[in-house]
Length: 265
Image (tube, rainbow, N blue to C red; front, top):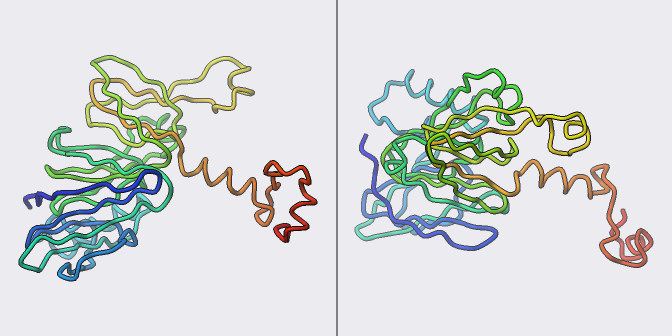
């Protein structure tokens, strides 16, 4: 299936959303639950898998949907089609604080590999599949397990990640070491491996874990400053109801202030 060509606008700073402009009969696919709003002429339809192959058999659709389950996503995606006679818009929101980035898959070699929960939406005809990590070390210690998402096609796709996203272009043989949880996506020619931190003190007391992610060029990589797991851990550690310890938040009364203002239930 030929990928639909779509126009877009990314809105916001810390809690971003992406507005997709659809010509008549153009379609965009998105993860279930990501819709923010849509114009009256937009019609939504739930599809098995990614709907990239419209003439696919029932078993083919089931296989496509099953691959999505392996990445932790729903069996279904939602297709949004403009059934009107003029341009209309549909908007999708990121599920947690961070950035949305646009990827022109054709310009990036036709394939981008990303973390399992990064995909937000894409032009219809884009294929969302799974990418197995063949190196045992990467699968065990790489932070994403043996399975990542791959986005294939020749149109626009949008991914989101926590904090700020930094794009780096690596030359052939150039090495970039990153925290394994901070890898958002990389192009198909990037070699992804892990590297031991080294040193007993670094391993035990460095606070960065035992392994780095090692990304070697040529190609592009996208790195996030705040993985969602790190944000969630910090929230839980500061929430008394979740077993965490409440911080004083700068008050000279500390815990007594919480008791007086009713927050220390």
